[in-house]
Length: 367
Image 1 (spheres, rainbow, N blue to C red):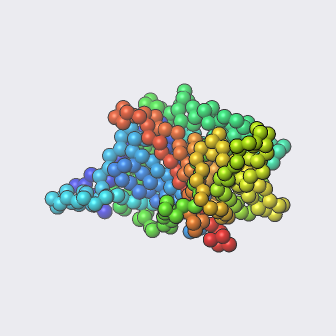
Image 2: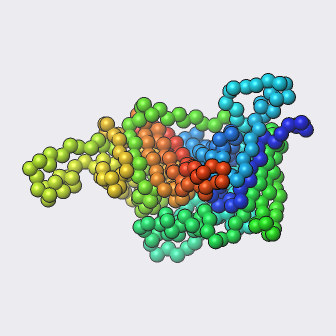
């Protein structure tokens, strides 16, 4: 464990942890104990796996931090031996993600609760239920029940504004050492220092997505998909995504009313079908640029997924602005959530659009 002559593998600091915490919460599953953190010179990849079926990855680029200094373990060894390496260098370790989030929120200013009870949301409650047992995180889901434009309203309290700010500095010396985290509430406020145990990174599920085998690709506002999923009965067992190619409509000699009737009678380009104990629910989306910003489908496609796995994406969906939904020929689902840009840094000239991705295997009946 001796690294007396080595530089720490990672030193990073940030003056306001709200945005960083929101990215981590997006992949914080209540029943998953550890997350794999991969450190590169470009930033952090935080990966969480569930049931060998669902893979969640938060891509956190270095400009999210005010300071991000990375010294690879092999780079330290090479410098001691006078060697150089051209290979892509990274370091990886595992941490209990929920403990880390609880630490970041120790002063109650990280923007949301990390309790395992937040796996379900108020938006999923039935009308008239006033119980707060399944309340959503912080203020993230409060505007969702109102409908309409909620992203702009909640961007302020989530990622900045006049609220109290909590700063953080973390240090990772290397394998066998804990992750040392210093959290401070303002310059003159209280400070706490904690050490989080790290573990050797184990191989996790690999779900490579081949773009050349893509059967369906849709880009839409996250609010459209979030509102649709929030309307579904939580007791649903599976969710089916159905795509159909756009039909060419003959509009030459048709009146406006005839063209409208033809569009209504046409097969929907995108359908979400939920199946549960109490029946089925179907929601159709036309190929309208006001709804689907991008739609690509060359042949009919239909794959089903466990509903409980899709609900794991709700935390990321709530704080994202756009969603990319892709399905390949074998049913592998990729959901990418584009997060609001991080605050501009002095050394970067602008913020980077970080994102969270979920990949999920289709149910065997469709695979």
